[in-house]
Length: 571
Ligand code: FES
Image (cartoon, rainbow, N blue to C red):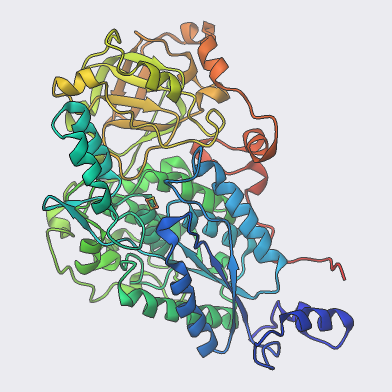
């Protein structure tokens, strides 16, 4: 085993080593500092992150595994983000969580880390941090909740909230029934059970190689999660002994595998931003175009909400991610590794599909091209994304008149105005929702439709936004438009009544205006007024340094790695 990093704190007989050891001697074994790997458990458990509340129990199993393998477990609570609770949007704090976790991993006497996450931003922030510190690391995804039911129907949390609330607005569900469904939505511990961002990022962490293969997607209450957690503790010790770091595990091929997995599972569009940010920390050249180039050939195999019918515990009983990946093995990078030092593809043999309704065999794919499409054109010079599997087929090629909203507040104020000039062919445009503009790039792109359209039976129109969309949402929504309006992007120049052209097959998004007309326009005074740059604190730092969505919306000074070294000592 190579020399331990923690020896820099604990070995020797001088005053500094004395101080470091003495304060840690609180019941640990006497030989705790004699060459035993010190393993942090970076834990995002929090009562205010309900999807991660159970991670204390998970941490206990991880600790048992670390002890059993000869290491010393050290729980390290890190910044946690509850997607449904944190205002104005959890994405504003992803980079802060990543930065704080990175610094605490580097600052402390640890040799490796087990990362415990679940709710949407937690696994991305942990992976960004681990990539920048580059100590041996692996993820234990906290797992999805069990399926709740209402009136005999399974409820997909997130997705069915949108559906039920739209039904109330359309007059097909009473307000009383809507409130009744609330207590049925969250049946157990765990994160959202649809193929939302949390499910997606847990599975993609495994596709990247950063999870013990076969363990992402285990439902949170399933006892196999604790067994997997025990194994993760043992694995962390092994990784330290063998010097296996994120920069050894994660390669361009790992990201290829994640993109293939993202398409095959019909994962969240948010994964695009998160994977770009993680790759940026590793210096891996990954671009928005790679998602289209690699992902567009990949069949959609998983029939889960929001694009399909089933939920996450169905996916696990049907065979889980490895059964899905086995169907597309030829599209995967055969060399890309996992945390155990073996290739991902070496884990695929024997993984059968146990329910062919939930996981489709490749020859019976839900869609032959399930990936995320990347659009460019004079409305999105640096790109925008759409998830065709969640869109209405008849709208994938469309020309319609823009109805523009300058901010989410402007949208709420006018969407149900009876005088709003909008019809089923209109294109709803919402700006001021990008990384800088909101700030924090909230999940508002799937704008609810005006009540008058719902009453006419319209259930989808083309929507365009510089923000994000919940992974549990659906519709013909073009999002992550870059550059955003607040960064001078042309989305800020569109006016109500302009004609917008969408061609998903042709990968274009245009406003039908000559270049000279666009160049001559200034942003609307309302759009400028809606962007009031914060004056202090994290929001100020964020707005001054955040990058655009097409490169992952990380902060410019956080891209890359600083490694694990700390050269100075305060004692
Ligand atoms: Fe936490 Fe959906 S709110 S995963």
